[in-house]
Each structure stands twice: as structure tokens, then as C-alpha cells.
View 1 (cartoon, protein in one colour):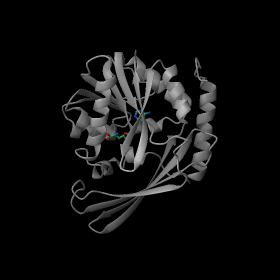
View 2 (cartoon, helix red, strand yellow):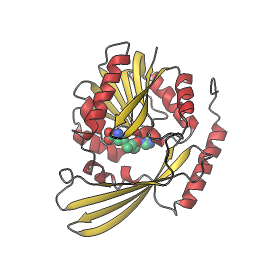
View 3 (cartoon, protein in one colour):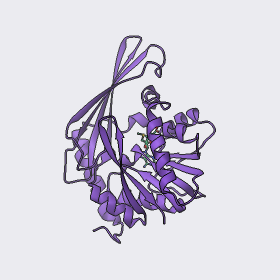
View 4 (tube, protein in one colour):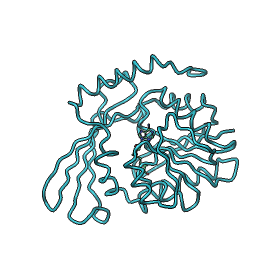
Length: 276
Ligand SMILES: C[S@@+](CC[C@H](N)C(=O)[O-])C[C@H]1O[C@@H](n2cnc3c(N)ncnc32)[C@H](O)[C@@H]1O
């Protein structure tokens, strides 16, 4: 069990450099996380905040209201990216967004000029206040070691008011991961600038099932007025068992409730965690 485990810095550094070695060999030096840097301008072109993100945010709102042991006014969205969740949550709550990427924060501010955004690393952030609720959505995938997840949960616990609630959920776990899965999306015409069309291809592959991460390789086919430009991107993301999630969350001090969120034919585990 994980109870009382200390973060062993040396072991973490060794694990992280092994992950870097293993993945960079396979990735042929493809640059990492471009979607949150020079390619961030593509982000708003799919996933309409007003429709696609609304359903999830309604679900999160209902979990906040059902499980919090205090009234929920203030919400911290950790890993807020382009602010599509913030766009919906701000209708009901006073929302602060936190992200490591300046380019994504710029998009989030454009979409939500009335909200506060902070640039920080979710593993180490220290803010001046506590919140009634915290949402950590898909950005939690960027925690690639147990130590990173442990640091994030400890930061989140510190920043929750007593009786506050955190909703967090993995996109994939070792139980649900599908090796070599490829998905294709098209930009939505009403979200893309005139003359621009983007096809976005994502492949998930785990080159080393003994570690706690896998590779998400992205290809973007960008057509501007019919002229093709192809860009590649690579993301290394975390992969843990449900038992590991449960143990790390309860070690951080949370009362952990396990729920299911359904989106079309897909079903995702969501952890609704209370600071008692
Ligand atoms: C898929 S995007 C999140 C999109 C978001 N759900 C939205 O509503 O638009 C993932 C985000 O995680 C952020 N991220 C990755 N590692 C991070 C870290 N260590 N600390 C804070 N943010 C991080 C990236 O910068 C990126 O914006």
C-alpha cells in the first residue's frame, strides 16, 4: 500500500530520465507539447466550449453541489488550458484558472476576460487563498509518475477549504488503455477561421508497460486556402491503475468517492474527493 510513502527525489529523477530516454528514442526527436506552445492557435478549432464542454461542466457542478460540505462559490480549475471548462463553470461560480502554458492562458483569458488566471506548475503551485472546489480535468494526464500525482494531490488538498470538494479523473487507466489506438478529429467549420481546415490524428502507444506513462503522438493536417501544411507533436502522459489513484488520493487525506461519467459510448471514472 502507499500509506505514508515519502517522495524519494533520487528515485523520481531516475524514473523521469528513464521515461525521457525510452520515449525520445521512439519519438525520433519529435518536439513535445507543441499544442500548448507554437500550435496553441489550433486549440479553439474543435471542442465547442458552449456545447461539448457544457455537459461535462453540468456534471461537475452537480458533483460539487452533492458532495461539498460547504456552499460552493469559489472554484480553482487546475490545468485550465484554453479555458473551455472555465467558460461554463463561471456562469455559476467565481473561477480561477491555473496552467503552466502562457499560450494556453492567453486563449483562456480571451474566452473568459472576467476571470483570474495564474501561470504555475500544478505539482508545486502556492496561491494565497483556499477554494470551495477544485476541478482537475484532462490536464492531470501530464502527471507521469506517482510522485508527480502525489505532489499535485497534496497541493490541491492544501488549497481546498475544509468541507471543500475536488473532482479529478483520468482519461485512461491501465484497465482501460488501448494499445495503438488512433483517433481522427476534424476542425469544426464554425470554430475555424475562414479558409482554414484542420484534421487532427492522435495515436496512443505504450512502449514500456513497466513504467507509468505512454506516448500520445499527434499529426495535424492544416489546410489554408487548400494548401497543405503537416505538423507533428508528441505528448508523454501518465498511466496508473485505479488502485493507484485510490491509494494516492486517500493518502493525500481525501474522503474518496468513485463515480462514472458517460459521454456517448465512453465511460470515465471520476473521483469526487472531499476534504473532511
Ligand atoms: C488538454 S489541455 C486542458 C484543456 C482544458 N480542459 C480546457 O478546458 O480547455 C492540458 C493542459 O495541461 C497543461 N499542463 C500540462 N502540464 C502542466 C503542469 N505541470 N502544470 C500546469 N499545467 C500543465 C497544459 O499546458 C495544457 O494547457
